[in-house]
Image (spheres, rainbow over the protein chains, first blue to last red):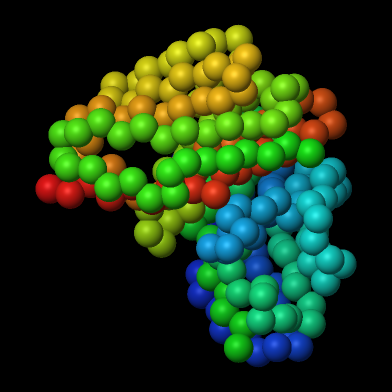
Length: 113
Length: 113
């Protein structure tokens, strides 16, 4: 079974731009969670989607948004990028929800200049 | 909300030695404690987990102990090998409405050959 895949793996953007990251969960998994990982703040929860509905949201500004499609693939979008948004963005999937063991993808490394 | 403290932030050992990483949590309702290993360029991978109804769990060279009264749990790696070098994260997760895991800040384990 293929693992969680994330695209692109690396991305460079400039301040003020917007970016869309994609995550394909493990086949059969319907829950997708997104995390931001930085050296200063560690792993921080962004949001969780299940069956195309956002079920939980972390403490991030409205510039961070996401969605999930009927095939469980998920995208997250960051608008009006700031230097502080530079981070590794990780996606994790489970069959039913974040209360289960999460399987992480390799992440998308975003650099904002 | 939950707060997880992880120590040490860096741990350097000689091959064959044991390594111990400790975490404390604040929410007594937390009942699931996973440990993740993150290698360079990869997402976190679950290596072992423990639930609050169990005091200790072992898997070959890896063991986790939980002290619910003191609200701390530890990862023990015996007979360390260079391939154990990575960043290790602990996490704590509750049930009900707040089942999103809270992660520790990570421990960089370096095993010298």
